Each structure stands twice: as structure tokens, then as C-alpha cells.
Image 1 (tube, each protein chain N blue to C red):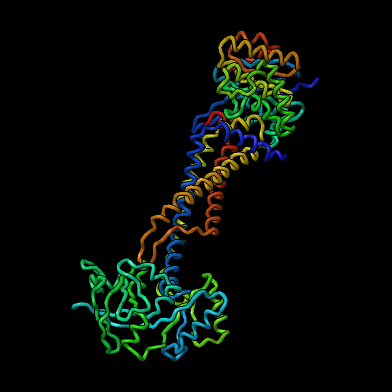
Image 2 (image 1 turned 45 degrees about the vertical axis):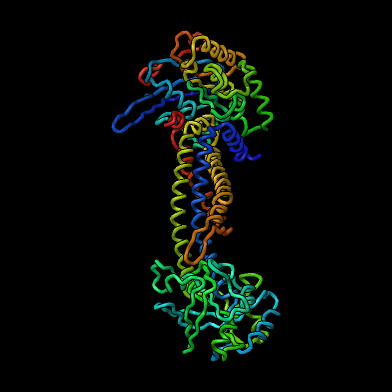
Length: 222
Length: 399
């Protein structure tokens, strides 16, 4: 079976004035469909940079990225946006919820371009129920705890039934109870939905949920 | 629904409903002030020009001014002429006058002014001078040795007018001199028509004039004609000419003389100040909208990260800018029509040529509203496009 993600020798260098930072140096990897892969490493090792390239939030300087048999390296911004919306789910450390939208509105937002509002609302309600937030559908992000906000972000990432979910340190801002709760949600998504998940974590105990662990150091897989 | 409308409407409706009301209110308020600033100057100048024009029509020339046939000094049968003129559709009333460039003197002071011999009842139906008496009374048909002076002629005891009788009051007797004839007249009233050219005139009755200069009985140097509507003068002039009434007819505009150049100057100043006003309003609106949208950098980053097309995101914030502009125009209109216009109606600007109030020209108003919307849209486009073209990661972090 073809891997759902193939990364071939990608590099990324950031420049600030005369200072060059080689964030990724020839990284190659493959992820199989349904895998739960954790990416670990020290701060500055290139974890987030790698996830940004895979999540089409940034463009590598060289190398190729193939997602679901499609080479996404040279796509236009329009095509990259379309792929992000339809096939990828991204969960950020800081939740990245729209502050003026309720929980259900945040979840349904990515589906609005494709479906009727009423259908989006129904599906968003189901997803909020899956993450145990059905009673807080009308809460604004400011009225939710960190763990609850992250679960809303997870529900939003699932609304368009993505082929891959990326999560960038989703538990970093949560207490241990909320973090465990969120991790159980990820495990459930991975096992029940057979979804592929790539997650960055600093927490050693979270790696037990993963099928595979990729360690990065100085922009290279070690 | 088209997604380029559906998503912006979805986001905007929530943003307006749940966004910071103070920020929204302040933004709309600033937009409204910028709009009021734009329409204030033009409405004031419209008011001055319209006020001056009204003063010319209502105190000096009427809508149409009839003078004698070319080569003649007098209209020989003004009573018959008035009868024929008033039979023309659209004519409300007409009044004959004899204008005499006379000398008026009081004690050691004297000066040359136009003294107008009128039929007071006729004159009241055409001009409003009788309504502007500030001391004493207006003329009556039976007055035979009375004179009503304009404020500029009467002057002030301590005034610094270049030429006046320095404080002549009601009851004083002044000397009227014309073509060698000298006659004492009692000042029965002083008027202030709020129009300097009218205030430099004096009025006597035709009966008084006949007593002084019997040869002028039954003659007129001009006839003032009041029409139902201002702006229809040329139609009425054509009807008067077609009816072959003996005389020459001019619209008030033809007779406005120096006031026409003053009016043109006001129009030029208005254009210049409007241009400056638009620049100031545009800069204000640009800054307000730019800051508002630049503060949405993180939200725009989130929308981009989840995959919404940059074009749709830009439309969202450009539409938001347009809504701010519409709200600003609506609030500005309320402030202007509800507060500014009534205030200046109650407390008009007192100018030598008129009491100016705010006059809204709806074409000007629409153009200025369009300018506000256009500037808001441009102000929305620039930051929205800059942010949607920046790196998503930077936008997400609010940088």
C-alpha cells in the first residue's frame, strides 16, 4: 500500500538579516495510512517546521512532499488552500479558534464552502458530542477551558473528514488531566476512524499512544 | 449561496454581533465624523450661496427685473405693465420702482445712496424688506414725507462705517436732494435685510416722490417680478417677451453683478476645501480601517490555516470596511440632519450677505458618501491583501 505521506529530502532555511537558520536539512520519511506518528525533539530541532511543511502552511526550499499520491510541493497558494481545507486537519498548540464564533460555529466553519449551513451545523454538533462538548456548543472560546478549546479545535479539524490530521503540541498548554483527556480523543480518532495522525509532543508519556516515534535533532531525523 | 458571499456574511454577522462593541462604536463614530466633516463645508457654502441668492431675489431684484426699453429712461405706464405681467402664468406679483441716485444729509453728514420710490403694498408682495425692520415701522401708502433707511445708511454713532449718517434714528429729519430738488424727510424706520447691497438703500413712497418731483408721477425705472418658483425665470421671461410687454427682462442672476463673482468665489473655495476635506477624511478612514483590519491579523491567519481561500478572506474584511463606512454614513447623516442642520437653522452664521444655514445638496451628499465607501474599500483591500499574502505562520502568531 502506498504511504499517505512521503517526504523526500526536504530542507528549509530561515533567514533574518545575515543570520541563517537551517531548520530542516534533508528530511525524508514516509507515513502509512492510519498510523499515529509522534514527532519529538528538543526546542529548535525542526519539529514545527516539519509539520508546517507537511500541513502546507509553509513551502520547503527543496525536496518533495507527496500527500495521498499528490505531489504538493509546487502547488499554487489557491491549490494549497484547497488541499488544506478538503484533506488536511491542523490542530495548533494555541487552539487557533475564532474568538467571535461559538464552539459549533468554529467547528462548522471549514465545511461551509461545501455544504448547506444546516448540514454543517448538524455534523458539527455530532463532532462536538464525540469530544464530549455537546452541552457547550454555544460557548465562545473565552467561555471554555484550555482543554475544551483544544477539543473544539480537534472537532474542527475533523469536520471535512480529512485524510491526515496534524497536531502541533496540542497538550502543551493543558494541565495533566485535560491533556490526558485530549490524548484519549486523539487515540479514539485514530482507532475508530482509522485516521492518520502526525503529532508533535514534548511529553514522553504521550508517546505511548503512538504507533511510531520520529525524533528530530538539528533539522535531521535521528 | 455563493461561498464568496456565504462565508463573509457568516463571519461578519458574528463579528458584528459578538465583537467588541466599543471598538465597533468608536470606528463607526470616527467614520461618521469624517463624513460630517465632508458634508459640513459643502453644506455651509451651499447655504451661503443659496442665502445670498435668496437675499438678491427677495430684497433687491425679485426673480425677474424689468428695465425700460433700450434708449429710454422710464417705463411709461407701469400700472398697465404690472397688470399684463401678473397675467402671465407663474408670476406671483410685480412691483414698480423709481430708483433715484440721491444725496441724503443729516447735520453735517451727507452721502450718495439709491433712494427707491415704491408702492409699499406692491413692494410687500414682491420683496421681504418690510419684514426686516429693526427700528420704527415700514412705509404705508399714505406716507408723504417719510423715509425708511437701510442699516448701512443710518449707521451708528460710534460706528466706523466709511459712509453713513452716523446714527440717524427713527424720528430724525434728514435732507433728501435729487436733481436740485431738496426735501426734508422724517425717518420712520430702519431695516436690516442682512444683505449689504440692500442695506445701502432707502425707501420712500411714490406719493412722496410725486410731491418732490411731480414730473415722475406714473413712471418707473424698473419693475420687480416675483415668480412661483426660483429657477423658472427664463420660461417666464420668454412668456413676457412673447407677450410684447414693452421693456427688457433680466433674471436675478443677470442682475446679481458683484454677487455673482462672490458666489463663484465661494464655489471655487468650496471645491478646494472639499478636496482638502476628502484628503483628511480619506486619511482618517484609511488609518481607522487599516488598524482595525491589521488587528485581525491572527484571525486572518486562522482562516488561512484552515484553508479558506485568500480571496474569500479578503472579501470578508473588505465587506467589513464597507459596512463600517455605511454605518458611519448613517450615523453621520443622523448627526448632521438631527443636530448640525437644526442648530444652524436656529443659530445661522451672520454674514454681510445673508444669514447662512446648512443646505444639503443631495448630489454632493451622494458623491461624498461614495467617496467614504470607496476610501473604506481601498483601506480594507490593502491590509487584507497584505495579510493574506504574508506567511501563514507569521499571521497566526499576530506578527
